[in-house]
Length: 588
Image (tube, rainbow, N blue to C red; front, side):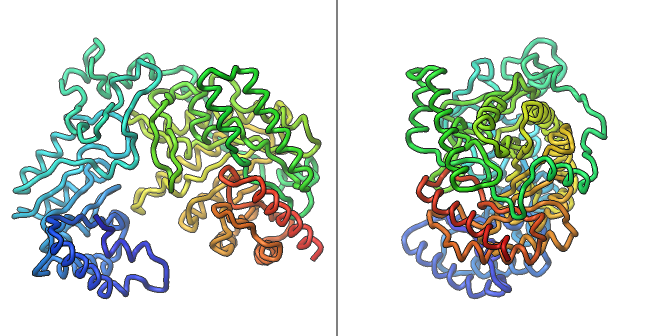
């Protein structure tokens, strides 16, 4: 298994990486020849870049590459895999090459069926039909999968049934809580079994009154455990609208009294081994609620004192009580189920347990207010309330598949709206609603992007527009390059947007300037993904570049992201440099 040569170059950086395709294909030819000599019968080459919009030249390059590789005299059989969408014009291009097998995603890319039909008889090609969703936990819709599979079987001599993508995105085992959700998710120990674990195949289940023992989609949608009156729409169009930004900014500045280039962090502070041990002991029942709360409060007090000593302007409570920025909220909202062992790789060696959204979402009680107000009671400086936004909660959960994503996003947004109001009532003057997944969740095809951005932006605004104009709303974006969604970032209407920017040398500021962005912005000046402590002069240089693009009165100074994965020595040294650099640049 290798990344395909075309995708390799389309994901590369440089003036024109794709111009090196012929050179790279020569290298791939050597690899295939060596694998054939080692007795390898098949090689899978992944080309997921072609489920996005591609130019005629890029599609021609794909065809040219696989004709050359297919014409090799001594090679394994070649299987070209794609996933996360439909291949568009790239599919007939691949079918017009000598490769033996082509994989198509028929869950996220149903349009592949039309392309296959238009291609006519497929001769000796094997079509690997991705009929089982590899990115979610719900049982496969048997009727839809069989219909799609029958269409492919009528066109191709050889068909293999597969998952729509790799199984990296789903857990090995599925022991959901509470017990009554058993039978809804696919529930497998070996993922290969999932293609045979079909949901109810009886047509009458769409209208039957008695519960379906296989928990098919129509019955899940109507079930008492999936519906909630509290999650029904209860907002008007103007509930997504705040007052004029200039007036808001003036009121907020009079309330907060911040200097130019105010300093802050993104939210989390180091999750030490001691904190993780306390959380594990609490889950195991060996540390009672009172003991756990006392341990977390001690950590919050430590974080507040440290920030005051460092001279930061807007503080955070450090989030010691949170296991994960999505799971933490999922465990406190109706309509979510958590797992004990549903681990999924996030990045590198970091794993998370995504919650499952199985029903209507509603807030049972305030989720963060007690921690934020305790932190605020320890200092006279403003402490940010910290929430995860609706789009990111959906992106990093297993989401119900029986209603539109936009509806579920609005339900989550209403729960967060109530939380924002409660934080404001409790005296929290700054509230940050993080949306790091805004760009990540953008559809790969341009003709689908605006619909997504409309509901994504609308959900954020629904969550944040219930507070008064003198409460400052922040958002945070990271893990992506945001040029493609720059107008959506503006449309979020957050008072301050902090963005990962240190590794890109502040290039996001040019994008913001190009659209006339006029609100507060905090481009990251410290790459927190590395243990390296940025030198003072380096932070000063980054800030001077930023001030050249954004007036100091609108520019915030912050790290790229949260500090959860860093150690306290790294954090303290880096933040000292950050605060000192801000003071130096303020002085000119």
